[in-house]
Length: 306
Image: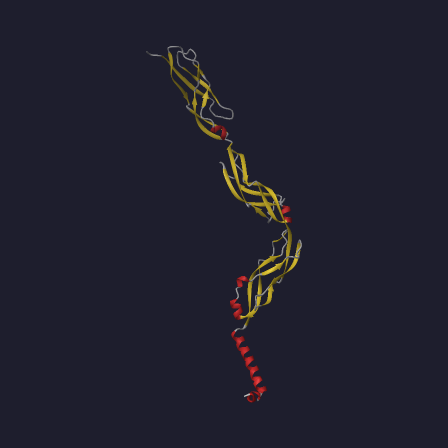
Protein backbone atom coordinates (compact mmCIF):
# COMPACT_ATOMS: atom_id res chain seq x y z
CA UNK A 1 0.00 0.00 0.00
CA UNK A 2 2.78 2.43 0.90
CA UNK A 3 4.46 1.60 -2.37
CA UNK A 4 1.35 2.68 -4.29
CA UNK A 5 1.20 5.96 -2.34
CA UNK A 6 4.82 6.73 -3.07
CA UNK A 7 4.34 6.22 -6.76
CA UNK A 8 3.65 9.39 -8.81
CA UNK A 9 3.52 11.55 -5.67
CA UNK A 10 4.19 14.84 -7.56
CA UNK A 11 1.09 14.28 -9.67
CA UNK A 12 -0.98 13.43 -6.62
CA UNK A 13 0.23 16.59 -4.82
CA UNK A 14 -0.73 18.72 -7.79
CA UNK A 15 -4.15 17.09 -7.84
CA UNK A 16 -4.62 17.96 -4.14
CA UNK A 17 -3.62 21.57 -4.71
CA UNK A 18 -5.94 21.80 -7.68
CA UNK A 19 -8.79 20.46 -5.55
CA UNK A 20 -8.10 23.05 -2.83
CA UNK A 21 -8.04 25.89 -5.36
CA UNK A 22 -11.25 24.64 -6.93
CA UNK A 23 -12.93 24.43 -3.49
CA UNK A 24 -11.82 28.00 -2.77
CA UNK A 25 -13.35 29.32 -5.97
CA UNK A 26 -16.55 27.34 -5.43
CA UNK A 27 -16.93 28.68 -1.90
CA UNK A 28 -16.15 32.20 -3.06
CA UNK A 29 -18.92 31.98 -5.62
CA UNK A 30 -21.35 30.71 -2.97
CA UNK A 31 -20.33 33.33 -0.33
CA UNK A 32 -18.78 36.20 -2.29
CA UNK A 33 -17.11 39.24 -0.71
CA UNK A 34 -19.37 42.26 -1.02
CA UNK A 35 -19.32 45.98 -0.27
CA UNK A 36 -22.28 47.64 1.37
CA UNK A 37 -22.98 51.25 2.46
CA UNK A 38 -24.67 52.21 5.72
CA UNK A 39 -25.78 55.51 7.24
CA UNK A 40 -24.77 55.35 10.89
CA UNK A 41 -25.15 57.76 13.84
CA UNK A 42 -22.14 59.63 15.18
CA UNK A 43 -21.35 59.72 18.88
CA UNK A 44 -19.09 62.30 20.53
CA UNK A 45 -16.83 60.68 23.08
CA UNK A 46 -14.50 61.98 25.81
CA UNK A 47 -15.81 65.57 25.68
CA UNK A 48 -15.01 67.60 28.79
CA UNK A 49 -18.02 68.49 30.93
CA UNK A 50 -17.52 72.24 30.48
CA UNK A 51 -17.30 72.01 26.67
CA UNK A 52 -20.16 71.98 24.21
CA UNK A 53 -20.38 70.97 20.53
CA UNK A 54 -23.55 71.71 18.57
CA UNK A 55 -22.43 71.35 14.95
CA UNK A 56 -21.17 67.75 14.94
CA UNK A 57 -22.87 65.67 12.21
CA UNK A 58 -25.69 63.41 13.32
CA UNK A 59 -24.79 60.70 10.80
CA UNK A 60 -22.09 59.64 8.33
CA UNK A 61 -21.92 57.06 5.57
CA UNK A 62 -19.60 54.06 5.91
CA UNK A 63 -18.66 51.46 3.32
CA UNK A 64 -17.90 47.96 4.67
CA UNK A 65 -16.52 44.90 2.91
CA UNK A 66 -17.05 41.30 3.90
CA UNK A 67 -18.54 37.91 3.03
CA UNK A 68 -22.17 37.91 2.09
CA UNK A 69 -23.28 35.65 4.96
CA UNK A 70 -21.48 37.91 7.46
CA UNK A 71 -23.23 40.99 6.02
CA UNK A 72 -26.62 39.27 6.13
CA UNK A 73 -26.21 38.20 9.74
CA UNK A 74 -24.88 41.57 10.91
CA UNK A 75 -27.24 43.90 12.82
CA UNK A 76 -26.87 47.29 11.16
CA UNK A 77 -28.69 49.08 14.03
CA UNK A 78 -25.68 48.39 16.26
CA UNK A 79 -23.23 50.26 14.01
CA UNK A 80 -21.85 53.51 15.44
CA UNK A 81 -19.26 56.01 14.28
CA UNK A 82 -17.52 58.22 16.82
CA UNK A 83 -15.58 61.42 17.35
CA UNK A 84 -12.84 61.33 19.96
CA UNK A 85 -13.11 64.80 21.55
CA UNK A 86 -10.49 64.26 24.24
CA UNK A 87 -8.05 66.68 22.60
CA UNK A 88 -10.36 69.46 21.41
CA UNK A 89 -10.11 73.06 22.64
CA UNK A 90 -12.44 76.08 22.38
CA UNK A 91 -12.62 77.30 18.79
CA UNK A 92 -12.41 75.43 15.52
CA UNK A 93 -11.06 71.88 15.63
CA UNK A 94 -10.34 69.42 12.83
CA UNK A 95 -11.34 65.95 14.02
CA UNK A 96 -11.34 62.48 12.51
CA UNK A 97 -14.45 60.33 12.48
CA UNK A 98 -13.63 56.84 13.64
CA UNK A 99 -15.34 53.51 13.16
CA UNK A 100 -14.61 50.01 14.43
CA UNK A 101 -15.88 47.42 11.91
CA UNK A 102 -17.57 44.26 13.21
CA UNK A 103 -15.68 40.98 13.28
CA UNK A 104 -15.29 39.54 9.81
CA UNK A 105 -15.79 42.91 8.12
CA UNK A 106 -13.32 45.53 6.96
CA UNK A 107 -13.78 49.29 6.65
CA UNK A 108 -13.49 50.59 3.09
CA UNK A 109 -14.45 54.25 3.50
CA UNK A 110 -16.07 56.84 5.79
CA UNK A 111 -17.89 59.78 4.18
CA UNK A 112 -16.76 62.24 5.45
CA UNK A 113 -13.79 60.97 7.40
CA UNK A 114 -12.70 64.36 8.79
CA UNK A 115 -14.76 67.42 9.75
CA UNK A 116 -14.31 70.84 11.36
CA UNK A 117 -16.28 71.42 14.55
CA UNK A 118 -16.69 74.50 16.73
CA UNK A 119 -16.09 73.94 20.40
CA UNK A 120 -17.26 76.39 23.03
CA UNK A 121 -17.36 76.40 26.78
CA UNK A 122 -20.70 75.66 28.42
CA UNK A 123 -22.31 78.46 30.44
CA UNK A 124 -25.60 79.12 32.26
CA UNK A 125 -27.25 82.28 33.60
CA UNK A 126 -30.47 83.20 35.37
CA UNK A 127 -32.34 86.04 33.62
CA UNK A 128 -35.69 87.68 34.48
CA UNK A 129 -38.58 87.35 32.03
CA UNK A 130 -39.94 90.50 30.37
CA UNK A 131 -43.22 90.87 28.50
CA UNK A 132 -43.20 92.36 25.01
CA UNK A 133 -46.76 93.45 24.09
CA UNK A 134 -47.94 93.01 20.51
CA UNK A 135 -50.48 95.67 19.54
CA UNK A 136 -52.04 98.02 22.10
CA UNK A 137 -55.11 98.46 24.26
CA UNK A 138 -57.93 100.73 23.10
CA UNK A 139 -58.08 104.23 24.56
CA UNK A 140 -60.76 103.30 27.10
CA UNK A 141 -58.74 100.40 28.59
CA UNK A 142 -56.15 100.79 31.35
CA UNK A 143 -53.69 98.15 32.55
CA UNK A 144 -54.23 97.56 36.25
CA UNK A 145 -51.57 94.84 36.75
CA UNK A 146 -49.71 92.08 34.94
CA UNK A 147 -48.06 89.01 36.46
CA UNK A 148 -45.66 86.69 34.62
CA UNK A 149 -44.74 83.14 35.65
CA UNK A 150 -41.92 82.21 35.90
CA UNK A 151 -40.32 85.50 36.93
CA UNK A 152 -36.88 84.25 35.83
CA UNK A 153 -35.45 81.38 33.79
CA UNK A 154 -32.10 79.70 33.21
CA UNK A 155 -30.44 80.17 29.82
CA UNK A 156 -27.63 77.79 28.92
CA UNK A 157 -25.49 76.78 25.96
CA UNK A 158 -22.42 78.17 24.29
CA UNK A 159 -20.67 80.63 26.55
CA UNK A 160 -20.39 83.24 23.80
CA UNK A 161 -24.14 83.13 23.09
CA UNK A 162 -25.17 82.95 26.74
CA UNK A 163 -23.07 86.03 27.52
CA UNK A 164 -24.73 87.84 24.60
CA UNK A 165 -28.25 87.37 26.03
CA UNK A 166 -29.63 90.81 26.94
CA UNK A 167 -33.14 89.75 27.94
CA UNK A 168 -35.59 86.86 27.89
CA UNK A 169 -38.96 87.94 26.53
CA UNK A 170 -42.51 86.65 26.29
CA UNK A 171 -44.57 88.06 23.43
CA UNK A 172 -48.24 88.73 24.28
CA UNK A 173 -50.87 89.94 21.82
CA UNK A 174 -52.94 92.53 23.73
CA UNK A 175 -54.79 94.04 20.77
CA UNK A 176 -58.56 93.97 21.23
CA UNK A 177 -58.46 92.79 24.85
CA UNK A 178 -61.08 94.45 27.05
CA UNK A 179 -61.34 92.09 30.04
CA UNK A 180 -58.94 90.27 32.33
CA UNK A 181 -57.11 87.53 30.42
CA UNK A 182 -54.17 85.14 30.54
CA UNK A 183 -51.73 84.15 27.81
CA UNK A 184 -49.17 81.36 27.31
CA UNK A 185 -46.22 81.84 24.98
CA UNK A 186 -42.80 80.39 24.13
CA UNK A 187 -39.94 82.41 25.57
CA UNK A 188 -37.16 83.90 23.45
CA UNK A 189 -33.62 85.04 24.34
CA UNK A 190 -32.65 88.34 22.68
CA UNK A 191 -29.37 90.16 22.28
CA UNK A 192 -29.14 93.95 22.53
CA UNK A 193 -30.33 94.30 18.92
CA UNK A 194 -33.38 92.11 19.42
CA UNK A 195 -31.97 89.13 17.55
CA UNK A 196 -33.13 85.71 18.80
CA UNK A 197 -30.21 83.67 20.16
CA UNK A 198 -29.91 79.89 19.89
CA UNK A 199 -29.65 79.02 23.58
CA UNK A 200 -31.57 76.65 25.82
CA UNK A 201 -34.24 78.24 28.05
CA UNK A 202 -35.57 76.38 31.06
CA UNK A 203 -38.52 76.50 31.37
CA UNK A 204 -39.15 77.53 27.78
CA UNK A 205 -42.73 78.76 28.20
CA UNK A 206 -44.25 81.54 30.28
CA UNK A 207 -47.73 82.56 31.38
CA UNK A 208 -48.92 86.14 31.82
CA UNK A 209 -52.00 87.20 33.78
CA UNK A 210 -53.48 90.60 32.91
CA UNK A 211 -55.92 92.66 34.97
CA UNK A 212 -57.60 95.48 33.04
CA UNK A 213 -59.83 98.43 33.91
CA UNK A 214 -62.27 100.26 31.70
CA UNK A 215 -61.44 103.97 31.73
CA UNK A 216 -65.08 104.65 30.78
CA UNK A 217 -68.02 102.47 31.68
CA UNK A 218 -71.69 103.34 31.39
CA UNK A 219 -74.33 102.07 33.77
CA UNK A 220 -78.05 102.83 34.36
CA UNK A 221 -78.92 103.27 38.06
CA UNK A 222 -82.10 104.33 39.91
CA UNK A 223 -82.57 107.79 41.45
CA UNK A 224 -83.60 108.03 45.10
CA UNK A 225 -84.83 111.03 47.09
CA UNK A 226 -83.68 111.41 50.72
CA UNK A 227 -85.75 113.54 53.11
CA UNK A 228 -84.99 115.41 56.32
CA UNK A 229 -87.32 116.70 59.01
CA UNK A 230 -90.94 115.77 59.54
CA UNK A 231 -94.29 117.05 58.34
CA UNK A 232 -96.64 118.83 60.74
CA UNK A 233 -98.60 116.65 63.13
CA UNK A 234 -101.74 115.43 61.50
CA UNK A 235 -100.13 115.22 58.06
CA UNK A 236 -98.36 112.40 56.31
CA UNK A 237 -96.23 111.69 53.21
CA UNK A 238 -98.30 109.69 50.77
CA UNK A 239 -95.61 109.26 48.09
CA UNK A 240 -92.27 110.50 46.77
CA UNK A 241 -91.70 110.47 43.00
CA UNK A 242 -88.84 111.56 40.79
CA UNK A 243 -88.64 112.24 37.07
CA UNK A 244 -86.73 110.59 35.47
CA UNK A 245 -86.64 107.51 37.67
CA UNK A 246 -83.13 106.48 36.58
CA UNK A 247 -80.09 107.90 34.79
CA UNK A 248 -76.91 106.73 33.11
CA UNK A 249 -73.66 107.35 34.94
CA UNK A 250 -70.16 107.13 33.45
CA UNK A 251 -66.72 106.58 34.97
CA UNK A 252 -63.90 104.15 35.63
CA UNK A 253 -65.00 100.56 35.83
CA UNK A 254 -64.14 99.99 39.50
CA UNK A 255 -65.99 103.18 40.49
CA UNK A 256 -69.09 102.54 38.39
CA UNK A 257 -69.32 98.95 39.61
CA UNK A 258 -69.67 100.25 43.18
CA UNK A 259 -72.56 102.63 42.34
CA UNK A 260 -76.00 101.15 43.01
CA UNK A 261 -78.06 104.40 43.08
CA UNK A 262 -77.77 108.16 42.78
CA UNK A 263 -79.43 110.44 45.33
CA UNK A 264 -80.82 113.93 44.98
CA UNK A 265 -80.31 116.74 47.40
CA UNK A 266 -82.39 116.09 50.55
CA UNK A 267 -85.96 117.44 50.55
CA UNK A 268 -86.76 119.30 53.80
CA UNK A 269 -90.17 118.25 55.15
CA UNK A 270 -90.01 120.22 58.38
CA UNK A 271 -93.50 121.45 59.27
CA UNK A 272 -94.86 120.81 55.78
CA UNK A 273 -98.64 120.72 55.33
CA UNK A 274 -98.87 120.51 51.55
CA UNK A 275 -97.12 118.74 48.69
CA UNK A 276 -93.63 119.81 47.73
CA UNK A 277 -92.24 119.70 44.21
CA UNK A 278 -89.38 121.23 42.27
CA UNK A 279 -86.07 120.60 40.59
CA UNK A 280 -83.33 119.16 42.76
CA UNK A 281 -79.65 118.63 42.00
CA UNK A 282 -78.15 115.15 41.84
CA UNK A 283 -75.35 114.26 44.23
CA UNK A 284 -72.76 112.45 42.08
CA UNK A 285 -69.83 110.68 43.79
CA UNK A 286 -66.33 111.81 42.87
CA UNK A 287 -65.25 110.22 39.59
CA UNK A 288 -68.84 109.56 38.48
CA UNK A 289 -70.36 111.68 35.72
CA UNK A 290 -73.76 112.00 34.08
CA UNK A 291 -75.33 114.17 31.42
CA UNK A 292 -78.27 114.67 33.80
CA UNK A 293 -77.56 116.99 36.72
CA UNK A 294 -81.06 117.89 38.02
CA UNK A 295 -84.33 115.99 38.30
CA UNK A 296 -87.92 116.86 39.19
CA UNK A 297 -89.06 115.67 42.60
CA UNK A 298 -92.61 115.58 43.95
CA UNK A 299 -93.48 114.76 47.55
CA UNK A 300 -97.24 114.17 48.01
CA UNK A 301 -98.27 115.36 51.51
CA UNK A 302 -101.84 114.98 52.73
CA UNK A 303 -103.78 115.45 55.93
CA UNK A 304 -104.30 112.27 57.83
CA UNK A 305 -107.77 110.88 57.72
CA UNK A 306 -109.40 109.22 60.72
